[in-house]
Structure formats: structure tokens, C-alpha cells
Image (cartoon, rainbow, N blue to C red; front, top):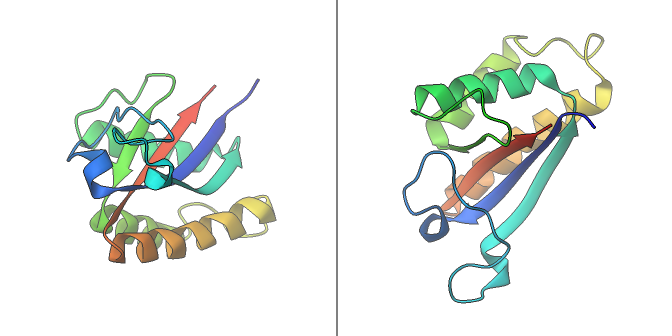
Length: 126
């Protein structure tokens, strides 16, 4: 057991304008398996999980729920990048190097996916 965290990219239509609690299935309503694209995963990166839970609460979701999921828009990813650059997630020496590198890569991938018109979802569970 532990904190398992995932980021995925979905089509705008799949997200259907929802900001949190989006039902994630590997297929859209038409059986299209490309609707969901895996982006990144982390284990026990509690600083990032807390950041995402606060974002979920800002959007009106239940930040205390197990299995929280929240949609990140371009502004959210920009703010995540700014907080990361400001050291809010720690420096490479304070974080597991793998978490630091994955977060940096995730931010770049998320920006690219949003430019392609896709939505980014963060999900976590214990």
C-alpha cells in the first residue's frame, strides 16, 4: 500500500468540461481506446499530491477523498511550472532525483498535450 499517483492525457470531448471526478476508462463512448494516454506516474510524492489536492479543492472537488482526480488546464500547468521553478517542490538534493526529473518532464509533456487540444488529469489513490 502507498500513495500511487498518475497523470494522463484525454481528449477534450472525453473530459466533457468537468474539472474533477472524471470517470476514467480506457475507451471513450464509441470504443476508441486512444481517448486515454498515460503520461507519468509517481509513488509517494506527497508534496505534489498536496499541491494537486489543493487544486482540486479550488475547483470545487473533495480534496480529502481517496482516489482524487483533477483536471489541469493551461493555467494550472503554468502555475505548477512556476511553483516547481520557485523550489516549492524542493531541490533535486531534497527530493528523490527520479521524482524531480519526472515532474520536470511531466510539465513539458502536459504543456505539449494542451497545445494539441487535450486535457490533463491527475489521479491518486492510497
